[in-house]
Length: 214
Image 1 (cartoon, rainbow, N blue to C red):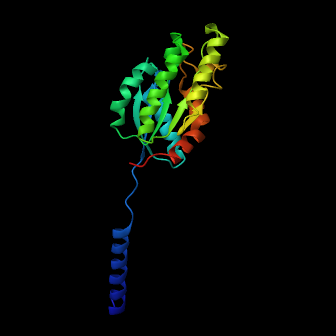
Image 2 (cartoon, rainbow, N blue to C red; image 1 turned 60 degrees about the horizontal axis):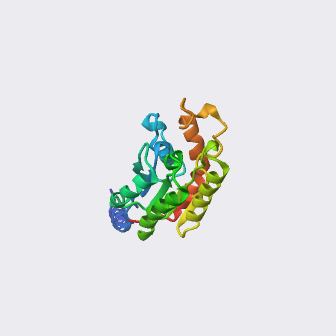
Image 3 (cartoon, rainbow, N blue to C red; image 1 turned 120 degrees about the vertical axis):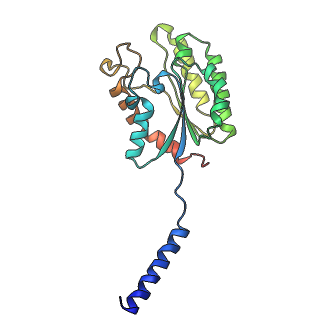
Protein backbone atom coordinates (compact mmCIF):
# COMPACT_ATOMS: atom_id res chain seq x y z
CA UNK A 1 0.00 0.00 0.00
CA UNK A 2 1.33 3.44 -0.92
CA UNK A 3 1.81 6.02 1.87
CA UNK A 4 -0.99 8.09 0.35
CA UNK A 5 -3.45 5.19 0.40
CA UNK A 6 -2.36 4.26 3.88
CA UNK A 7 -3.08 7.77 5.15
CA UNK A 8 -6.44 7.82 3.37
CA UNK A 9 -7.37 4.47 4.90
CA UNK A 10 -6.46 5.64 8.38
CA UNK A 11 -8.50 8.81 7.89
CA UNK A 12 -11.56 6.88 6.72
CA UNK A 13 -11.21 4.51 9.65
CA UNK A 14 -11.06 7.38 12.10
CA UNK A 15 -14.09 9.00 10.46
CA UNK A 16 -16.07 5.78 10.68
CA UNK A 17 -15.15 5.33 14.32
CA UNK A 18 -16.24 8.88 15.02
CA UNK A 19 -19.56 8.32 13.31
CA UNK A 20 -20.10 5.19 15.34
CA UNK A 21 -19.47 7.12 18.52
CA UNK A 22 -21.88 9.93 17.72
CA UNK A 23 -24.67 7.84 16.19
CA UNK A 24 -27.77 8.02 18.37
CA UNK A 25 -28.78 4.90 20.25
CA UNK A 26 -31.56 2.86 18.65
CA UNK A 27 -34.89 3.86 20.12
CA UNK A 28 -36.64 1.21 22.17
CA UNK A 29 -39.93 -0.12 20.81
CA UNK A 30 -43.06 1.59 22.07
CA UNK A 31 -44.59 -0.46 24.86
CA UNK A 32 -48.23 -0.95 23.94
CA UNK A 33 -50.56 -2.20 26.67
CA UNK A 34 -53.55 -4.25 25.52
CA UNK A 35 -56.06 -4.17 28.36
CA UNK A 36 -59.05 -6.24 27.38
CA UNK A 37 -61.11 -9.39 27.51
CA UNK A 38 -61.27 -12.57 25.42
CA UNK A 39 -61.49 -10.69 22.12
CA UNK A 40 -58.01 -9.21 22.52
CA UNK A 41 -56.75 -12.21 24.49
CA UNK A 42 -57.24 -14.37 21.39
CA UNK A 43 -59.77 -16.79 22.84
CA UNK A 44 -59.96 -20.07 20.90
CA UNK A 45 -57.10 -19.19 18.56
CA UNK A 46 -53.45 -20.22 18.23
CA UNK A 47 -51.22 -17.42 19.58
CA UNK A 48 -50.09 -16.41 16.10
CA UNK A 49 -53.71 -15.84 14.99
CA UNK A 50 -54.78 -13.80 18.02
CA UNK A 51 -55.35 -10.06 18.09
CA UNK A 52 -52.06 -9.16 19.71
CA UNK A 53 -49.88 -11.16 17.31
CA UNK A 54 -51.78 -9.99 14.25
CA UNK A 55 -51.66 -6.36 15.36
CA UNK A 56 -47.92 -6.55 16.01
CA UNK A 57 -47.35 -8.12 12.58
CA UNK A 58 -49.50 -5.50 10.84
CA UNK A 59 -47.59 -2.70 12.55
CA UNK A 60 -44.26 -4.31 11.64
CA UNK A 61 -45.37 -4.35 8.00
CA UNK A 62 -45.83 -0.58 8.38
CA UNK A 63 -42.34 -0.29 9.91
CA UNK A 64 -43.75 0.22 13.40
CA UNK A 65 -42.03 -1.80 16.09
CA UNK A 66 -43.95 -2.31 19.32
CA UNK A 67 -43.51 -4.39 22.45
CA UNK A 68 -46.92 -5.75 23.40
CA UNK A 69 -47.81 -5.79 27.09
CA UNK A 70 -50.45 -8.49 27.43
CA UNK A 71 -53.10 -7.19 29.80
CA UNK A 72 -56.00 -9.07 28.22
CA UNK A 73 -57.81 -11.83 30.09
CA UNK A 74 -60.64 -14.05 28.92
CA UNK A 75 -63.79 -13.37 30.92
CA UNK A 76 -62.46 -10.13 32.34
CA UNK A 77 -64.82 -7.35 33.32
CA UNK A 78 -64.04 -3.67 33.62
CA UNK A 79 -64.20 -4.07 37.40
CA UNK A 80 -61.59 -6.82 37.36
CA UNK A 81 -59.36 -4.93 34.96
CA UNK A 82 -59.61 -1.87 37.18
CA UNK A 83 -57.95 -3.85 39.97
CA UNK A 84 -55.16 -5.01 37.68
CA UNK A 85 -54.19 -1.67 36.18
CA UNK A 86 -51.84 -0.45 38.96
CA UNK A 87 -49.72 -3.58 38.57
CA UNK A 88 -49.68 -3.27 34.79
CA UNK A 89 -48.43 0.31 35.04
CA UNK A 90 -45.20 -1.13 36.48
CA UNK A 91 -44.48 -2.46 32.96
CA UNK A 92 -44.10 1.17 31.79
CA UNK A 93 -46.53 1.27 28.86
CA UNK A 94 -46.21 4.15 26.43
CA UNK A 95 -49.70 3.74 24.96
CA UNK A 96 -52.76 1.62 25.70
CA UNK A 97 -55.71 -0.01 23.98
CA UNK A 98 -58.60 -0.47 26.43
CA UNK A 99 -61.11 -3.03 25.12
CA UNK A 100 -63.52 -3.75 27.94
CA UNK A 101 -67.22 -3.91 28.65
CA UNK A 102 -68.42 -6.97 26.74
CA UNK A 103 -68.57 -9.20 29.81
CA UNK A 104 -70.08 -6.45 31.94
CA UNK A 105 -72.80 -5.91 29.35
CA UNK A 106 -73.50 -9.64 29.08
CA UNK A 107 -74.47 -9.46 32.77
CA UNK A 108 -76.53 -6.30 32.13
CA UNK A 109 -74.38 -4.22 34.47
CA UNK A 110 -75.87 -0.74 35.05
CA UNK A 111 -74.31 1.68 32.56
CA UNK A 112 -73.26 4.02 35.38
CA UNK A 113 -71.16 1.25 36.92
CA UNK A 114 -69.42 0.50 33.65
CA UNK A 115 -68.72 4.19 33.17
CA UNK A 116 -67.20 4.47 36.64
CA UNK A 117 -64.86 1.54 36.04
CA UNK A 118 -63.76 2.83 32.64
CA UNK A 119 -63.13 6.32 34.02
CA UNK A 120 -60.99 4.98 36.86
CA UNK A 121 -58.99 2.78 34.47
CA UNK A 122 -58.35 5.65 32.09
CA UNK A 123 -57.62 7.94 35.03
CA UNK A 124 -54.77 5.63 36.07
CA UNK A 125 -53.36 5.86 32.55
CA UNK A 126 -53.84 9.61 32.36
CA UNK A 127 -51.75 10.12 35.49
CA UNK A 128 -48.84 8.71 33.46
CA UNK A 129 -49.82 10.74 30.36
CA UNK A 130 -50.42 7.50 28.46
CA UNK A 131 -52.63 7.98 25.36
CA UNK A 132 -55.55 5.57 25.12
CA UNK A 133 -57.55 3.99 22.33
CA UNK A 134 -60.89 3.08 23.91
CA UNK A 135 -62.67 0.25 22.07
CA UNK A 136 -66.41 0.27 22.57
CA UNK A 137 -68.94 -2.52 22.29
CA UNK A 138 -72.66 -2.81 21.58
CA UNK A 139 -75.14 -4.82 23.68
CA UNK A 140 -77.12 -7.71 22.24
CA UNK A 141 -80.53 -6.78 20.85
CA UNK A 142 -82.38 -8.70 23.55
CA UNK A 143 -81.08 -6.29 26.20
CA UNK A 144 -83.24 -3.59 24.65
CA UNK A 145 -82.79 -0.37 22.71
CA UNK A 146 -82.73 1.82 25.83
CA UNK A 147 -79.90 -0.18 27.40
CA UNK A 148 -77.96 -0.13 24.11
CA UNK A 149 -78.35 3.64 23.86
CA UNK A 150 -77.19 4.12 27.46
CA UNK A 151 -74.08 1.98 26.87
CA UNK A 152 -73.30 3.83 23.65
CA UNK A 153 -73.54 7.10 25.57
CA UNK A 154 -71.11 5.77 28.21
CA UNK A 155 -68.39 5.13 25.63
CA UNK A 156 -69.10 8.47 23.95
CA UNK A 157 -68.67 10.37 27.22
CA UNK A 158 -65.57 8.49 28.36
CA UNK A 159 -64.10 8.77 24.87
CA UNK A 160 -64.28 12.57 25.04
CA UNK A 161 -61.68 12.76 27.80
CA UNK A 162 -58.31 14.32 26.96
CA UNK A 163 -55.80 11.83 25.64
CA UNK A 164 -58.51 9.32 24.65
CA UNK A 165 -59.36 8.20 21.13
CA UNK A 166 -62.68 6.38 20.72
CA UNK A 167 -63.48 3.44 18.46
CA UNK A 168 -67.24 3.20 19.13
CA UNK A 169 -67.62 -0.45 18.17
CA UNK A 170 -64.51 -2.59 18.10
CA UNK A 171 -66.13 -5.38 16.08
CA UNK A 172 -68.07 -3.22 13.64
CA UNK A 173 -68.22 -4.76 10.20
CA UNK A 174 -67.98 -8.39 11.29
CA UNK A 175 -71.30 -8.67 13.15
CA UNK A 176 -73.18 -9.77 10.03
CA UNK A 177 -70.46 -12.13 8.83
CA UNK A 178 -70.90 -15.51 10.55
CA UNK A 179 -68.05 -16.98 8.47
CA UNK A 180 -65.51 -14.96 10.41
CA UNK A 181 -66.61 -16.09 13.87
CA UNK A 182 -65.72 -19.15 15.86
CA UNK A 183 -68.56 -21.68 16.30
CA UNK A 184 -69.75 -19.85 19.44
CA UNK A 185 -70.80 -16.92 17.28
CA UNK A 186 -69.18 -14.48 19.68
CA UNK A 187 -65.42 -14.59 19.17
CA UNK A 188 -63.80 -13.80 15.83
CA UNK A 189 -61.73 -16.45 14.09
CA UNK A 190 -58.35 -15.65 12.52
CA UNK A 191 -60.00 -14.03 9.51
CA UNK A 192 -62.24 -11.95 11.75
CA UNK A 193 -59.27 -10.77 13.80
CA UNK A 194 -57.46 -9.84 10.60
CA UNK A 195 -60.46 -7.74 9.57
CA UNK A 196 -60.54 -5.95 12.93
CA UNK A 197 -56.80 -5.27 12.86
CA UNK A 198 -56.95 -3.87 9.32
CA UNK A 199 -59.81 -1.56 10.27
CA UNK A 200 -58.27 -0.13 13.43
CA UNK A 201 -54.67 0.01 12.19
CA UNK A 202 -54.82 3.73 11.23
CA UNK A 203 -56.15 4.56 14.71
CA UNK A 204 -53.41 2.51 16.38
CA UNK A 205 -50.78 4.32 14.32
CA UNK A 206 -52.17 7.68 15.46
CA UNK A 207 -52.10 6.36 19.03
CA UNK A 208 -48.44 5.40 18.69
CA UNK A 209 -47.63 8.86 17.34
CA UNK A 210 -48.78 10.21 20.71
CA UNK A 211 -47.04 7.53 22.77
CA UNK A 212 -45.05 8.32 25.87
CA UNK A 213 -41.35 7.62 25.42
CA UNK A 214 -39.92 5.78 28.40
